[in-house]
Image 1 (tube, rainbow, N blue to C red):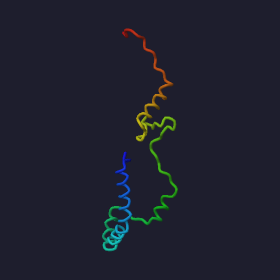
Image 2 (tube, rainbow, N blue to C red; image 1 turned 90 degrees about the vertical axis):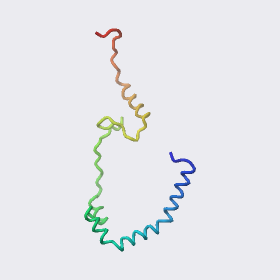
Image 3 (cartoon, helix red, strand yellow; image 1 turned 180 degrees about the horizontal axis):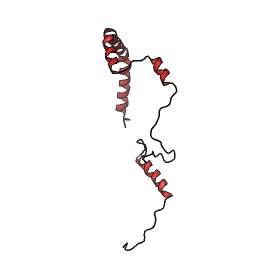
Length: 114
């Protein structure tokens, strides 16, 4: 929701505060890295491999992300028959009705079924 005047004002003020505090925050980060850079980098190296940005970009190249689930473009169903999370339930219901419209239920004879 977050469309009320109060929330808009708060978002605006938070943005202003971020702009105001950004230089101080940057200086604080730089001073921390200057003082204890060796300690911080050694701790990071134990957890992850530290690479320069150029090498990461070269490794990445122009590869596209592999997406495991395949979606039908017309029905928007994935391979498990699930709709996307972002889809509205009313839209799901409408698509399902269209899909089932072509299929007709067999007529069951009225009366006793023995």
